[in-house]
Length: 309
Image (tube, rainbow, N blue to C red; front, side, top):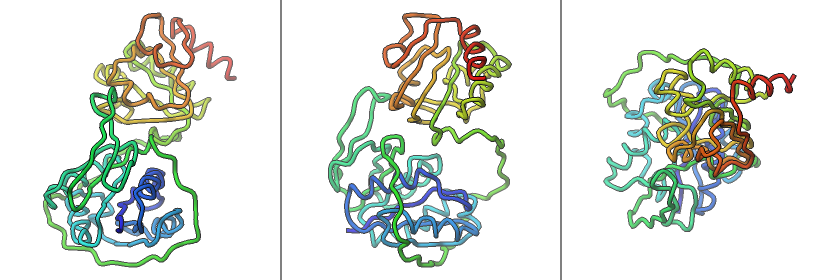
């Protein structure tokens, strides 16, 4: 039994989500082959070869893979699928884009966002915004799985395994890359940050989010937001934490002016320590918080920044 793990990377460095997905692959059991498809991504292939549990790395170069076009990567995975019983993807934006395409082309189900492995064909996953856990047993000949990184620790390193080069497949031409538009920031990436401070509707305005950002910069933290804050235009979409946003599990999560709707809790309840700051002492966020402060955030956050120096 062999497993194909489709890596997450930016052509320069391997994303930590790949190392966390490897933990799930090892729990399934069997040889794990890591697919590194991209453009000028040789360094990534070398890094993947050192992931504990990898028995082989398959390195494929192609411009379409470098721009993470879902159709092109799906066709590449399909061309290799015959040799594998399991195909695993990190449950990132790109993984969630490619996995359903692969499953549809193979006419099998996709088992999404797994949080645990109970056997080669049996997996745990959250349903109802994380309020219940479902155990899924698949009878499909090939299991297409996305792995929620927040639920798995990253593997360590090993002596490098062999790296093989494979040819790209023909670009299906269904999509064309135009340009990447991304904001640059010195803050850590939201899903991999060890500290996250998030603001909710209680922040009041986009300008007021500056007080959250000042504390984040002093803590070396990433900045998040509730859906209510994003929908109100206070924060950009890629800051959204929750069921319809990003799932995070940092060492410390600070929720500021967030009521704690179940959709938000689904995206951060696995955080190691949760701190809530809200002037409403009946806010649901206090039910999951390890530490709660009932206070006006416009007094508490500036004071916190002051104490941080």
